[in-house]
Length: 244
Image (cartoon, rainbow, N blue to C red):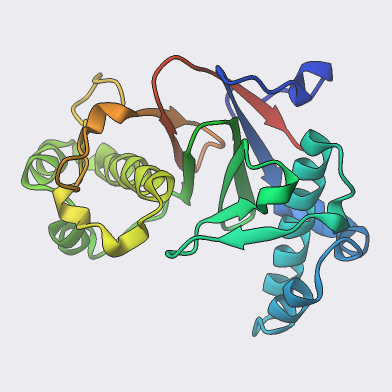
Protein backbone atom coordinates (compact mmCIF):
# COMPACT_ATOMS: atom_id res chain seq x y z
CA UNK A 1 0.00 0.00 0.00
CA UNK A 2 1.32 3.46 -0.85
CA UNK A 3 0.26 6.81 0.55
CA UNK A 4 -2.90 5.83 2.45
CA UNK A 5 -3.02 7.38 5.92
CA UNK A 6 -5.04 6.79 9.05
CA UNK A 7 -7.81 9.42 9.08
CA UNK A 8 -7.59 12.53 11.24
CA UNK A 9 -9.87 15.57 11.55
CA UNK A 10 -9.01 16.75 8.02
CA UNK A 11 -10.34 13.48 6.58
CA UNK A 12 -13.86 14.93 6.75
CA UNK A 13 -13.05 18.47 5.57
CA UNK A 14 -13.89 18.29 1.91
CA UNK A 15 -13.39 21.41 -0.19
CA UNK A 16 -13.78 21.84 -3.94
CA UNK A 17 -10.03 21.60 -4.54
CA UNK A 18 -9.54 18.30 -2.70
CA UNK A 19 -10.33 14.73 -3.72
CA UNK A 20 -10.51 12.08 -1.02
CA UNK A 21 -9.69 8.45 -1.77
CA UNK A 22 -10.65 5.83 0.81
CA UNK A 23 -9.16 2.35 0.83
CA UNK A 24 -11.26 -0.36 2.47
CA UNK A 25 -10.07 -3.90 3.21
CA UNK A 26 -13.30 -5.84 2.70
CA UNK A 27 -12.10 -8.91 4.58
CA UNK A 28 -11.53 -6.75 7.67
CA UNK A 29 -14.80 -4.84 7.23
CA UNK A 30 -16.64 -8.16 6.93
CA UNK A 31 -15.72 -8.97 10.54
CA UNK A 32 -18.19 -6.20 11.48
CA UNK A 33 -20.77 -7.17 8.88
CA UNK A 34 -23.64 -7.38 11.39
CA UNK A 35 -23.12 -3.74 12.33
CA UNK A 36 -22.96 -2.65 8.71
CA UNK A 37 -26.03 -4.69 7.77
CA UNK A 38 -28.09 -2.66 10.23
CA UNK A 39 -27.70 0.50 8.11
CA UNK A 40 -28.62 -1.07 4.75
CA UNK A 41 -31.89 -0.55 2.94
CA UNK A 42 -34.27 -3.44 2.30
CA UNK A 43 -33.29 -3.40 -1.38
CA UNK A 44 -29.60 -3.65 -0.49
CA UNK A 45 -30.29 -6.59 1.81
CA UNK A 46 -32.19 -8.36 -0.96
CA UNK A 47 -29.31 -7.74 -3.34
CA UNK A 48 -26.85 -9.22 -0.83
CA UNK A 49 -29.05 -12.31 -0.43
CA UNK A 50 -29.10 -12.83 -4.19
CA UNK A 51 -25.37 -13.60 -4.31
CA UNK A 52 -24.65 -17.24 -5.00
CA UNK A 53 -21.84 -17.48 -2.47
CA UNK A 54 -22.20 -16.31 1.11
CA UNK A 55 -18.76 -14.67 1.13
CA UNK A 56 -19.76 -12.44 -1.78
CA UNK A 57 -22.98 -11.38 -0.09
CA UNK A 58 -21.04 -10.69 3.08
CA UNK A 59 -18.51 -8.56 1.18
CA UNK A 60 -21.35 -6.61 -0.45
CA UNK A 61 -22.97 -5.89 2.92
CA UNK A 62 -19.66 -4.76 4.38
CA UNK A 63 -18.79 -2.58 1.39
CA UNK A 64 -22.18 -0.92 1.17
CA UNK A 65 -22.27 -0.44 4.92
CA UNK A 66 -18.86 1.27 4.85
CA UNK A 67 -20.01 3.47 1.96
CA UNK A 68 -23.12 4.56 3.87
CA UNK A 69 -21.05 5.24 6.97
CA UNK A 70 -18.51 7.30 5.00
CA UNK A 71 -21.05 9.39 3.12
CA UNK A 72 -23.14 9.86 6.25
CA UNK A 73 -20.09 11.21 8.08
CA UNK A 74 -19.45 13.79 5.36
CA UNK A 75 -23.08 14.91 5.31
CA UNK A 76 -23.71 14.69 9.04
CA UNK A 77 -26.54 12.20 8.46
CA UNK A 78 -27.33 8.77 9.86
CA UNK A 79 -26.03 6.09 7.42
CA UNK A 80 -29.40 4.31 7.34
CA UNK A 81 -31.17 7.53 6.30
CA UNK A 82 -29.20 7.99 3.07
CA UNK A 83 -31.00 7.67 -0.23
CA UNK A 84 -29.17 6.92 -3.46
CA UNK A 85 -30.21 7.57 -7.02
CA UNK A 86 -28.76 5.98 -10.15
CA UNK A 87 -28.05 7.54 -13.53
CA UNK A 88 -29.20 6.13 -16.85
CA UNK A 89 -26.07 3.98 -16.99
CA UNK A 90 -26.12 3.05 -13.31
CA UNK A 91 -23.79 5.66 -11.82
CA UNK A 92 -24.75 6.16 -8.15
CA UNK A 93 -25.35 9.57 -6.56
CA UNK A 94 -26.75 11.06 -3.39
CA UNK A 95 -30.45 11.92 -3.61
CA UNK A 96 -30.92 15.60 -4.46
CA UNK A 97 -32.46 16.52 -1.12
CA UNK A 98 -29.43 15.20 0.78
CA UNK A 99 -26.58 17.24 -0.63
CA UNK A 100 -26.06 16.91 -4.36
CA UNK A 101 -22.80 18.88 -4.13
CA UNK A 102 -21.16 15.72 -2.78
CA UNK A 103 -20.03 13.33 -5.50
CA UNK A 104 -18.64 9.85 -5.00
CA UNK A 105 -17.72 6.71 -6.88
CA UNK A 106 -16.83 3.21 -5.76
CA UNK A 107 -14.88 0.29 -7.20
CA UNK A 108 -13.84 -3.03 -5.74
CA UNK A 109 -11.72 -5.98 -6.77
CA UNK A 110 -11.15 -9.15 -4.78
CA UNK A 111 -10.97 -8.00 -1.12
CA UNK A 112 -10.20 -4.33 -1.73
CA UNK A 113 -12.60 -1.41 -2.21
CA UNK A 114 -11.83 2.18 -3.18
CA UNK A 115 -14.20 5.09 -2.70
CA UNK A 116 -13.50 8.54 -4.20
CA UNK A 117 -15.34 11.54 -2.73
CA UNK A 118 -15.42 15.09 -4.13
CA UNK A 119 -17.33 18.34 -3.74
CA UNK A 120 -18.93 19.78 -6.89
CA UNK A 121 -16.85 17.64 -9.26
CA UNK A 122 -17.74 14.52 -11.21
CA UNK A 123 -15.45 11.64 -10.29
CA UNK A 124 -14.78 8.04 -11.22
CA UNK A 125 -12.47 5.47 -9.65
CA UNK A 126 -11.34 1.99 -10.61
CA UNK A 127 -9.26 -0.69 -8.92
CA UNK A 128 -8.21 -4.03 -10.34
CA UNK A 129 -6.30 -6.92 -8.87
CA UNK A 130 -3.30 -7.61 -11.09
CA UNK A 131 -3.55 -11.20 -12.29
CA UNK A 132 -2.14 -13.04 -15.32
CA UNK A 133 -4.38 -12.86 -18.40
CA UNK A 134 -3.83 -15.67 -20.92
CA UNK A 135 -5.86 -13.74 -23.52
CA UNK A 136 -4.36 -10.34 -22.70
CA UNK A 137 -3.58 -9.42 -26.33
CA UNK A 138 -7.04 -10.46 -27.51
CA UNK A 139 -8.73 -8.37 -24.81
CA UNK A 140 -6.51 -5.40 -25.59
CA UNK A 141 -7.40 -5.77 -29.27
CA UNK A 142 -11.06 -5.18 -28.35
CA UNK A 143 -10.77 -2.33 -25.83
CA UNK A 144 -7.47 -0.51 -26.46
CA UNK A 145 -6.77 2.10 -29.13
CA UNK A 146 -4.13 1.36 -31.77
CA UNK A 147 -1.61 3.60 -29.96
CA UNK A 148 -2.29 1.88 -26.64
CA UNK A 149 -1.83 -1.53 -28.28
CA UNK A 150 1.51 -0.38 -29.70
CA UNK A 151 2.76 0.62 -26.23
CA UNK A 152 1.51 -2.64 -24.75
CA UNK A 153 3.25 -4.69 -27.46
CA UNK A 154 6.52 -2.86 -26.82
CA UNK A 155 6.40 -3.37 -23.05
CA UNK A 156 8.92 -5.82 -21.53
CA UNK A 157 7.38 -9.20 -20.80
CA UNK A 158 7.76 -8.66 -17.05
CA UNK A 159 5.82 -5.38 -17.26
CA UNK A 160 3.18 -6.31 -19.81
CA UNK A 161 0.44 -7.31 -17.37
CA UNK A 162 0.95 -4.20 -15.23
CA UNK A 163 0.93 -2.04 -18.35
CA UNK A 164 -2.38 -3.59 -19.36
CA UNK A 165 -4.00 -2.89 -15.99
CA UNK A 166 -2.53 0.60 -15.80
CA UNK A 167 -4.22 1.40 -19.10
CA UNK A 168 -7.48 -0.29 -18.21
CA UNK A 169 -7.91 1.37 -14.81
CA UNK A 170 -7.27 4.80 -16.34
CA UNK A 171 -9.87 4.18 -19.04
CA UNK A 172 -12.50 2.74 -16.72
CA UNK A 173 -12.06 5.51 -14.14
CA UNK A 174 -12.82 8.02 -16.90
CA UNK A 175 -15.77 5.97 -18.19
CA UNK A 176 -17.27 5.92 -14.70
CA UNK A 177 -16.64 9.64 -14.15
CA UNK A 178 -18.29 10.54 -17.44
CA UNK A 179 -21.41 8.62 -16.44
CA UNK A 180 -22.11 7.11 -19.86
CA UNK A 181 -20.59 3.78 -18.88
CA UNK A 182 -19.79 1.29 -21.59
CA UNK A 183 -22.11 3.07 -24.00
CA UNK A 184 -18.88 4.91 -24.84
CA UNK A 185 -16.73 3.27 -27.57
CA UNK A 186 -13.95 1.99 -25.32
CA UNK A 187 -11.40 1.48 -28.09
CA UNK A 188 -11.88 5.12 -29.15
CA UNK A 189 -11.01 6.37 -25.67
CA UNK A 190 -7.28 6.86 -25.37
CA UNK A 191 -5.05 7.46 -22.35
CA UNK A 192 -1.35 8.15 -22.01
CA UNK A 193 0.61 4.95 -21.47
CA UNK A 194 4.24 5.37 -22.43
CA UNK A 195 6.77 4.72 -19.63
CA UNK A 196 7.28 7.77 -17.45
CA UNK A 197 4.38 9.66 -19.05
CA UNK A 198 1.90 11.19 -16.55
CA UNK A 199 -1.61 9.77 -16.55
CA UNK A 200 -3.73 11.79 -19.00
CA UNK A 201 -6.88 11.41 -21.07
CA UNK A 202 -5.96 11.94 -24.72
CA UNK A 203 -9.26 11.10 -26.44
CA UNK A 204 -12.67 11.20 -24.79
CA UNK A 205 -14.52 8.88 -27.16
CA UNK A 206 -17.31 11.46 -27.42
CA UNK A 207 -17.74 13.92 -30.27
CA UNK A 208 -17.33 17.48 -29.09
CA UNK A 209 -16.11 16.54 -25.59
CA UNK A 210 -12.68 17.96 -24.79
CA UNK A 211 -10.51 15.35 -23.02
CA UNK A 212 -8.91 18.27 -21.18
CA UNK A 213 -12.08 18.50 -19.10
CA UNK A 214 -10.80 15.51 -17.14
CA UNK A 215 -7.63 14.77 -15.21
CA UNK A 216 -6.33 11.32 -14.34
CA UNK A 217 -4.09 10.08 -11.58
CA UNK A 218 -2.80 6.62 -10.82
CA UNK A 219 -3.41 5.00 -7.44
CA UNK A 220 -1.30 2.36 -5.71
CA UNK A 221 -3.70 0.75 -3.24
CA UNK A 222 -1.65 -2.42 -2.81
CA UNK A 223 1.27 -4.40 -4.19
CA UNK A 224 -0.96 -6.56 -6.40
CA UNK A 225 -3.45 -3.88 -7.42
CA UNK A 226 -3.66 -1.11 -10.00
CA UNK A 227 -5.95 1.86 -9.60
CA UNK A 228 -6.83 5.21 -11.10
CA UNK A 229 -9.10 8.16 -10.44
CA UNK A 230 -10.64 10.52 -13.00
CA UNK A 231 -11.77 13.95 -11.81
CA UNK A 232 -13.44 16.89 -13.54
CA UNK A 233 -10.97 19.77 -13.83
CA UNK A 234 -7.28 20.00 -12.95
CA UNK A 235 -6.91 22.30 -9.95
CA UNK A 236 -7.20 19.71 -7.19
CA UNK A 237 -5.07 17.73 -4.78
CA UNK A 238 -5.55 14.19 -3.59
CA UNK A 239 -5.68 12.88 -0.03
CA UNK A 240 -5.72 9.13 0.55
CA UNK A 241 -7.19 7.58 3.69
CA UNK A 242 -7.32 4.07 5.12
CA UNK A 243 -10.67 2.95 6.50
CA UNK A 244 -10.33 1.20 9.83
